[in-house]
Image 1 (cartoon, rainbow, N blue to C red):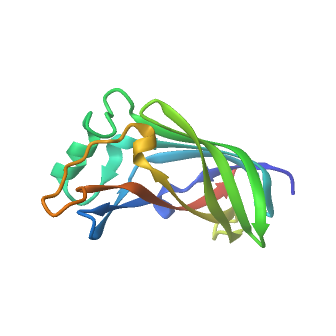
Image 2: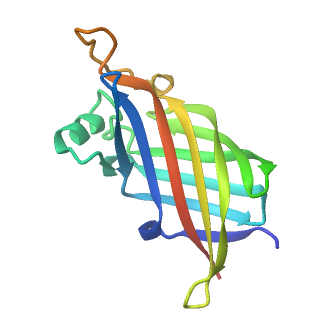
Length: 177
């Protein structure tokens, strides 16, 4: 199969993250609004082109005060940088249905090359006869690499917010005509 266009089904997809809080636990959150531009042969992603755009104002950590702080200039500064984007540059097969996807991640106007482990979860026809595929991806980034450096020192030592952010994506996409 040659590369074909795929449209992400946001109602069956998710972008989630977690970060250490107070050096002892992890806080999780997600982004509710995102879009992807995918051109791929799901049986061989090595020639795929993947673009992802995330609306940072759609952040949801189940705490309105924290979400508003994350939208502020202390963190994402969504007024000036409303989107986080990822564009694939190379995709290397690492196993059956397993890939390393390397590309440019841009947050707050800073672009860095990051690699995420991706898995082709499978495909088939939905009840309406449309070809549907599933992918998952995971990885981690350092938020300080993107200028997300706000923090607070703890009396017990350490900091309030960890530097490493773990990211997990689940994408379901349908083939475009």
